[in-house]
Length: 257
Image 1 (cartoon, helix red, strand yellow):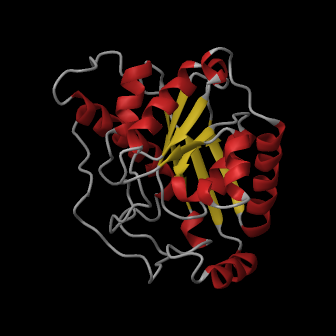
Image 2 (image 1 turned 60 degrees about the vertical axis):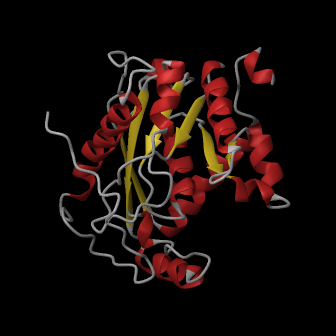
């Protein structure tokens, strides 16, 4: 893999796609981006860890990262890479395939670690899915993001987003046209906030339970970054998607201190 021998640079296609994402978001909503990525981290190595609330999230995050001068490589589900045209574009743009539920999922972690080691910025969703918490707060995360950070030693910048669930419904493409039409009329506010970097230097890779402790620290940071974005919706979202299921089995409990 050439990413192991030379620093990765985002191709023009991905830069153009981020510019397009900004135009799409501007058409459907009002984007507010706060916080920042420290300048010395923008070119990598860096992990961006974001909450996941809607199928519209990748477009929102592509636009928000563009606003902050960051071109991350997304870790995305393998289904996108199997699509005839989209898959080729995803590969050319440098994004990383994750085949969840298969033995190949471990290869995704290796690929991501190699990408970060080569100086990339990699964006991940620690929850591993669109969250189903009743209050739409970040769920208890999967340990893959923490294991990636522990393996490569890169800092993590938590990224919180709120409002994208008002554009596309959970079951998109079902209901997608209705959601887009509603967004065109109402133009909801979508807020994205970049939090303070999280470092895991005090945790030792291979120690029993360390991946879970690191995961909880990352999800805590995302939750803390999200709080200012929904001060007027602290318990339940105002916008309720009737097609969104609820799962309380992965509710994340914020650790004191």
